[in-house]
Length: 150
Image (cartoon, rainbow, N blue to C red; front, side):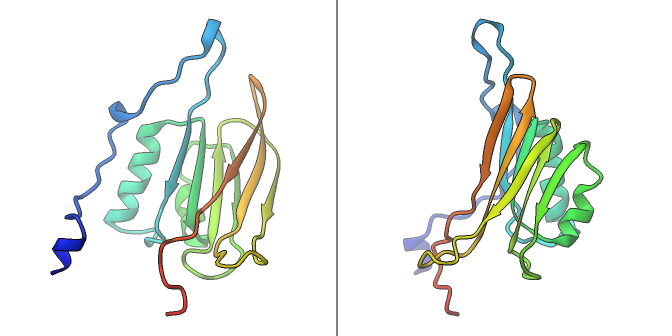
């Protein structure tokens, strides 16, 4: 019966060749940004290995992650991003977010939406000092389509 309502779930495999390549016009620099929801999977095991592989293969200049936690922070330390900012407002598995950048982070601040009905996750706003100038990025986790009351 459930198959009548939901399409079959297929395993996801990241392939860098599927990403569109942006090119700056008139020789201007381009910046690759990757956003990835780690779906509060544990920071160890095969699922976490696939997340790390996807981030590594993407080789993005800026990576925005949702549903991180302190265990993910430790796991991500092995990646080659010199400028990082983590926001873990709770000890919940899915409560945090992170920005990993090859460029300096001029400032980052968490934005709470606690007063917005149905809001679950905070956002993270960062100013990134890129060769093309300051780029403001917003790491946002939209409200999941779930009943949150249990």
